[in-house]
Structures are given as C-alpha cells and as structure tokens.
Image (cartoon, rainbow, N blue to C red; front, side, top):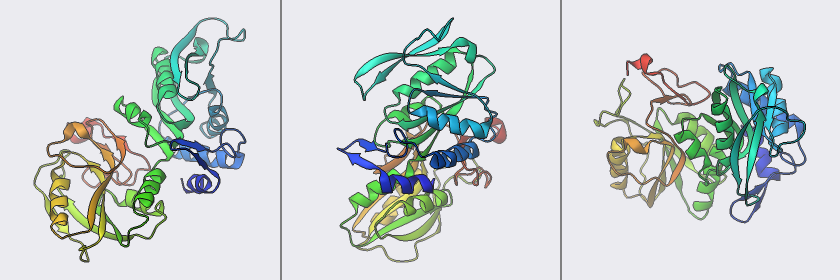
Amino acid sequence: MELLKERIRRDGKVKGTDVLKVDSFLNHQMDIKLFAEIGREFKRRFADCQINKILTIEASGIGIACITAQYFDCPVIFAKKSQTKNIAGEVYTAKVESFTHGRVYDIIVAKEFLGPGDRVLIIDDFLANGAALMGLSKLVEDAGATLVGAGIVIEKAFQPGGDRLREMGVRVESLARVAELGAEIARDYADKDRVLLVSVLRGSYIFMADLSRAIDIPVEIDFMSVSSYGKGTKSSGQVEIKKDLSDSIEGVHVIVVEDILDSGNTLSYLLHVLEARHPASIKLCTLLDKPERRVKPVEVHYSGFTIPDAFVVGYGLDYAEHYRNLPYIGILKPEVYGG
C-alpha cells in the first residue's frame, strides 16, 4: 500500500534496532483519512471471504478495526486485557505475553459475541513476535468460529511472528512488509556502484515491481525466464532457461528476485549459471520460502515469508497460467489440480 509506505518513510521514527514509532498517525494520534484507505485495502484483499465479525485487541488496534468494519458492514469485537463488571457471563480467554511490557496477561471475549458460524478477520496495527495474534486465534478456535485471516498494518519482517502464523496456516496480509525488504537491501548496497535486480519470470513480476519501488538507491533491472514446473504443481527438477539476461553482469552486484523458493532445483541451477559470469557479488531475494520442500541447499539472503508445503497462487504466482492477477496469495484447493 503505497500511501502507507510513504507515510512511514515520512513520519515514522526508528528507535534503536527494532522499534518503529508511528504514534503521530497510527497508534496514538490517529489519521482517520489514512485509516479509511487502510480499511478499503483490507476490504479489497479479503473481499470474497464473507466476513461477519472483525476481532482485535485493545487498545491500538480498535481504531483501525472500526474503520475497516465499515467496509465489511460488520461489528467489531475487541478482546479486553482484564475482566470488568461490564463483562458478565461466560467468556473465552487466552494468555498473551507482552514483549513491550514484559508480562503475561489474559485476553477476554464474551461468549455471546463470538461463536460457531462466525467468519472472523483479525485486525491489528503491528505484527512482531505474534503473541497477540496467536492469542486472538485461540479465542476464535475455542469459539468454534472460522478464522478467515489477519490484516496487519505493519509487519516487522525481522521478527518471527509472521512466519509462525503462516506456518500455522493463518492467512496474513500485511500492508507494509515488502517495504522493509527494500529498505534492508538499500542499506546493504548503499556504497555499491552497480546493483542489478534480476527478476525471474514470470512469477516474480509483481513482487519485483513493488520491491524495486521500495529501494531508494539506484538499481538496474533485467529479466530471466527459467522453468521447472511446466503445468504441474511440483518442481520437476528439469530446468530450462527460456530468456537470458540482456547484458553482461561481470563486476556487477546482482540480486536475484524470485517469487518462491521450493525444491531449490531451479535456483541452484540459476545461481550456478550466474556465478560463472563473474559478478561482483550475487544474492537471493525471495518473496516466499518453502523449506519443507528443499532438495538442494540454497542460501537465502532476503526472504519475505516462510510458508508450509502447499501450492500457492496469486500476486504473480500461477497454476497453468491462471490466478496470477489475484491481489493476494492463497492456497490452491487440491480439487483444482487433482492433488
């Protein structure tokens, strides 16, 4: 979401190595116009999910959740961090460890507001270690409701929460995630003369476009087309270069940009080919990493998300050239491909 990324670059403040302060527009003073755009974007990403409840946790997630709920025309439930006289009757509870405040507390939702038949979207401002979202996920599970996914405004890519949730099978949509990869690359290559991003077609084209715009140092761009899937859902191991680079990469700092790292067959072969052309350096940036499927070892320098062993489509990824234009990444149902 470009508006959000620009606001973070303009008004966000980095404290130390792991704290991003956005209190001037997100979680202390709140920019309602920005929240409206955030809500509209979450609606776009989860439009086909038949959501009838939005769940968040007090306090900073409540504002975003309420604005987002207007687009889904549904109520908001917020998990309380202490039971008050206003909560009567039976409740669902889960324990959540706060890394910010250094303590463990119970979160609470009244059973009358959440139950079987509900299709729930979790909304929160930050995702770091994932403790709050795992607690909210447990509340949904205990209620017998369906967790559709989690909409996160800012995901701290260098912390493990996002990977943990995705490994649990939770669909996580973060509005500011690729931007962090871009910022990391920009820092690492700030003093390099020539930096070349090599997009591995066709799956990485959307990721490549978003990533390149998030890198604020000069970069060059080129493309290769390499295939080992054909029309199947698993890498065949037979690698074929269909389109090669346009120019020499000798003495150039190369970053290979890939959509998904699966068995490692394709990328192991591709990196070997490129290393033989004497670049100054070569690194790999992949949007998705599927380590359970690894056959050949491949070193990953920049990774967006670790995902389970499932066939995913959307955001440039396809099955037999279908689904590339989906605005999200989803797991393809086995009945579609006979799995």
